[in-house]
Structure formats: C-alpha cells, structure tokens
Length: 462
Image (cartoon, rainbow, N blue to C red; front, top):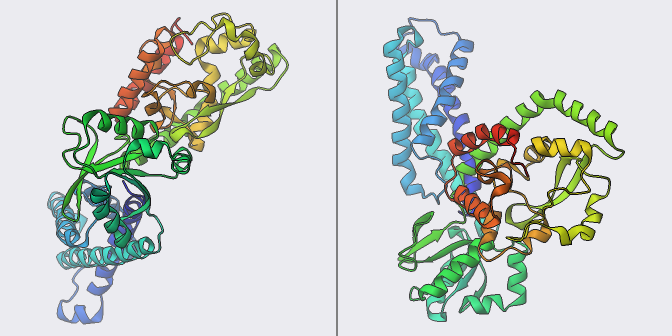
C-alpha cells in the first residue's frame, strides 16, 4: 500500500461526511427558496434545528454504507471508476432512508428534499473526488508521498518498470536504486543502510524467471526488513499470502504486503487500542495507586522503570513497567548472564532472579508489573495484543525468519502469553506470534484479551 493511497482514503472519510451534510442542507434551503416554493408550494413545517440533527445522524450512517460499498478500500483510486461507485453508494443510502420513512411515517415529509439531496450528494462527492485526486497527483508530481522502491532484475526487465515509475509519478513510486540480484543489493552499503533506517518502502522484482530458492530468499529478506514486495506475476505461484493484483504498462504486477494488518485494519486496531486502554487506565487507576504504595514501602527506588524495547519496524522505544527489581538491576544483568535458563533462543530468564524484590515477586506472579504498558498503548508504540516486546540485544540474536515479529507493534499480551506462558520454547512462541500476525482480526484480539486475566492468575508465570 502506497502512502498516498492511505492519506487519500483517510481524508475522503471526513470529506464525504461533510458533503453529505452539505447536500442535505443545500436541499433544505433550495426547497424553501422562493424560486422552488413558487413552483411547489410548501404545505408543512420543518424546523431547521430538528432537520439538522436528522442530517447529522444520516451522515454518520452514510459513512458506514459508503465503507461497505468500497468507497475507502486502501487501493489506488481511478476517477473513471468512482462515478458508478458513488451512484451505487448514494443510491443505497437513499433506499435505506425510504425504508425508514415507510416504517416510521413521521420521520420525514418531503420527497423533493430526499430526491434533491440524493442528486446533490452524487454531484458533491464526485466533484470532491476530482479535486482530491488532482491535489494528490499534484503532490505526487512534486515528489511528495511517493513510496520509495528498489528495483531488482536484469536491465532489460527493469527498464520498463523504472521508466514508468520515473515518468509517471502518479503511480505513487520513486525508484531509489536498481540491482540485478538480491545479493548485489545486500553487498551495497548505501542501499542496506537505507533499508536498515526504514527509508525503503518496496522492493520490486522484475524478473519473472527467478528460481524458487532466490524467490524465497527475497521474500524472507522483505519480511525480515518489513518491506512490501512487488513482483511480476507468476513469480510465487505457490505462495498463499496477503496479495494485491495490479498492472503497469500492461504487465501484471503482484504485491505481497508484510502483514494483513494494514490500511483500515490498522486504523481499526489502533482505534480499539486507544478506547480500551484509556478505559482500563481510568478503571484501574486506584490499583495503580495501591501498587505504587506497595513498591515504595518495600524497597527504595522509583515506582516505574523505563526499559528499551524493539517495536514495529525495528524502532527502539521506551517501555514502562512497575519496578519489580532492585535499583539499577539492568547493570547487574551481565554478572548473572551465565545463569540464564533459556537456551532455546535469545531470551534471558532465571527462575529465582536475585535482583527481584519481595514486592516484585508478587507483581511478576500476577503480571501486574506490566500494567503501566497501558501508557505505551495510548502513546502508540505498543498495542494491547501483539508479539512480546524484546530487548535490542535479544532482537540482534534473532534467527532467520523471526524478524517478521517486528512487522507490527508489540503487545501487552498475545497468543504466546495465553497459550502456554513461560513453558513455551522461544521457537513455539514465535510461531504463535507469527500466526497471530498473519491471521489478525478484532475478534481474535478480544478473545486474547478475555483469556489474559486467567493467564495472569495461573501458576505458570513469566
């Protein structure tokens, strides 16, 4: 998904909401204007304030109807396809309004306003599309919002792709560099630095004859670096992934996105996170105070601790927890590293860690030390549900394939925590988290959240 598509679709939601209201208001004043009233006398009263409240309700419902009708799908929009879709969406809204009037006669009394609102809605929304697309294309021509892409493949295959992207900025891509193979890309310090610094959005494989091993290596490389892969069709016929089909210069192009949690799904998950985390913070605020008092009376030191963790796309962020160890415990880790009981992966764990305080043992047993991560969720560097957040040192020792865990935000809880807790081997934990990434849904998030309290109170704790 290109940045321009995401910004365009987000803006259209608010624009359409305002235009539905504008269409309704315009129809109201036109109906009661002298010009229309002289031709069609008014035989009823319709207070403007009551009418406006009704229009606001209809506008909210309209956005739902438009979303279901595909107005805001996170794909590149073309003006030629918009008018039929707009007519269908606005007409569907009209049908619902007519049905509501049929079941509740006092709801509305002017067929003229309904028909005029329908016509004006189509005109306003389509006109707005012309304007929005013109603004989008203007920004793209100026190089704003372009997705940065590296093109792979032999020069003969790359040429048509590169020429189209360079001469047609409306496609939404900017070619940053070209290489014949993935190996050449990996051996180029400048290109790898851009990838490590998350300055590359897409890799385009133009060679449709690439062999299976090289194709899988490229797919793994893109997944580990959270890069969207686009390729000429027939490249990965056996792959059943989150794909999008398009074309350029008559060549069928397939796009493999890093995770299905993108576009509106990402917006829905973020909205869910914000609402639930704020509510939980308010409800649990008395418990926060009690825990703070417990910690301060047990040992000297701060109530909260700040820890460096690796988030989405490998970005380092500060994670908050209630302090469960002695002051400066992180500095003592090197002294007890030899006692690490986790030999199955990069994680560190000691059953009877000497750094843990008396209060800390209870907090860890109940997982209440993790409650301040609600602040991380509100800030936006964590999610309520997701892979376990790991330390930079642990991530640096990830095996090949595990970096897919970094394609989404880490979570306060996750499939691994509610499906076995500390008994899971790291490889098993990673598989559960990757399954979650590839099969995300709001329902799955809610199921995991419901299961979390039981996991917190079980004897098997991290």
